Length: 138
Image (cartoon, rainbow, N blue to C red):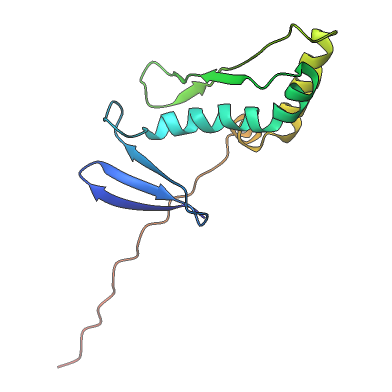
């Protein structure tokens, strides 16, 4: 479970039970990620976590980076695509096409975030229920 706490105007801290936290704020706010940036980071991070062992085992290298960006609708109120680019050294790879196939398959089958984005997961919003008062008869 992720807990979110307001720490200032338009400033929040998300934390998990393992002691990690991240600052969330409005787009462009210093020292924080916007919610859309976190979504983009989750997609890129999931692709990297899923493919890391496959790539590093075959490349013999240690360097693996990713870039991702949110392509938003004309209104800017929805993300329509999150292209993720993985970068790593192919100089020691005998068959780059085979590695590409394995990496794509692994991400498509096991990356929970990108699989969820493809399926357009729902995110039901639960709001507090107003306290009900009962009038005492006179």
